[in-house]
Image 1: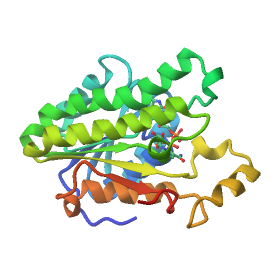
Image 2 (image 1 turned 135 degrees about the vertical axis):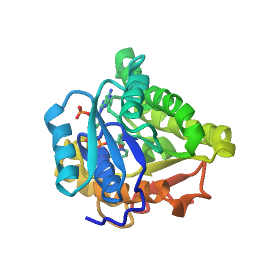
Image 3 (image 1 turned 45 degrees about the horizontal axis):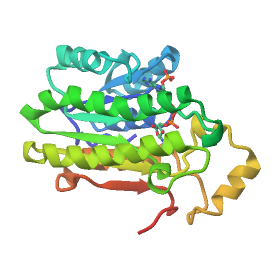
Image 4 (image 1 turned 90 degrees about the horizontal axis):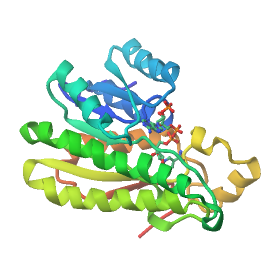
Length: 251
Ligand code: NAP
């Protein structure tokens, strides 16, 4: 684990950090010295494991439970972090779900759940951190997806939410630039996590054909991109979408 202390004194909130990409992001930011708020929905054991991993490596993390798409929760999580550490420097909007189906078979509840968890939560969490970040400057990083860049059959709800995150990224970047708050998106391609674990071996082989680097990415591949955008090395980058997809989407 690298420990270059580039995030020393930073406080970061990572939504959906109990597993997958969010966990890797939380661990990576903590390895750079950040104190991390590990948000999760219901998997307490997994979230505790994230905290233990961070603490075992000498880092600092706290658990933050709640549905980030529900009214009032983002404000509460940010209040909890501020009460403990009195600042928030980095927000990573990562919590996400899929409810895949063809549009002709997709029910309203699947549409609403995906738009609420994946997109509205990013609005609510961003809104909750803006005021404290006005004092210090800050970084907001939205985990979008290649599905939001190029669309994906069977994922109209997910693609709409992830494309919406990109619009939110650009609008917020323009609103907040004068306050030294940068807002960027990371658009992962196929990453090996629980979300892609349902894919059958032949589906994985088929999908690899469309990935020039010919492999699924790792959660660490995404975490490095987030760490870069959170770092001072990215201080002149805002409103951008960094694709971490093995070359699936170019141009
Ligand atoms: P994952 O392994 O399924 O983990 C999802 C995380 O989100 C968990 O920590 C979960 O908490 C949390 N979560 C879900 N709903 C929530 C809610 N309402 N409030 C708070 N937390 C909630 O997902 P992943 O594959 O790491 O994906 C993470 C992000 O990357 C998602 O936004 C996803 O769309 C995006 N992404 C993933 C891929 C990929 O290939 N995996 C590709 C592109 C983009 P619990 O553990 O408590 O349920």
